[in-house]
Image (tube, rainbow, N blue to C red):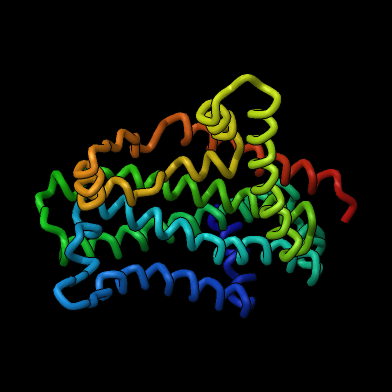
Length: 278
């Protein structure tokens, strides 16, 4: 594993575009801290993001992983460019000539995916912990360590998403087309939802449950939007006589679905590469 990872990071070391995208990505992750600086006064109205509870433990784990997951497209570009460069610079063929098997080649990419996801998760953990220790109203150890499953969900989400990007990169060979294929698949998932609602006698809620078995929707369901979970939002909703009953917890079924899709993407990547004439 270490040998294969060393090969991948050696390639990335000399890829300027990948290094720039990686720096931007981790820079933006660190930029989450800047949210705490958002503050403005309009007459009697005083607004300070850090004071509305978004950095309170354990809510911060949910909020920061959700925001960080939006930025994953920057690393997706790194993953798909890794594959397109293999074809463009013919390093794939050279690796195979040098004795690397196709299985080892795919595994090297998958290990890189896992490494990127793990580093991202650790980075978000450190940033969130620092922000929480500075701004949280609750600093008891039991509270700090609750809801850490959002970090696990974030890791699984990144591994699944990047594995999908890796498969598309092998399939279409060009990074721009791979990203385009990802967008097309996103649209297809919505079309499947509409078709299910149109053809089957089901409700929209049941339609979304069916859509939840598709890869991008399952990844999205891992970390649900945290906005309506915020105490300030719940207070406003309760004042108008409504109640939010949404389940924000990380669901085992979503973790399982994304894990299965990850296996499928990596397996199909190997099958595709094995059958392809290089």
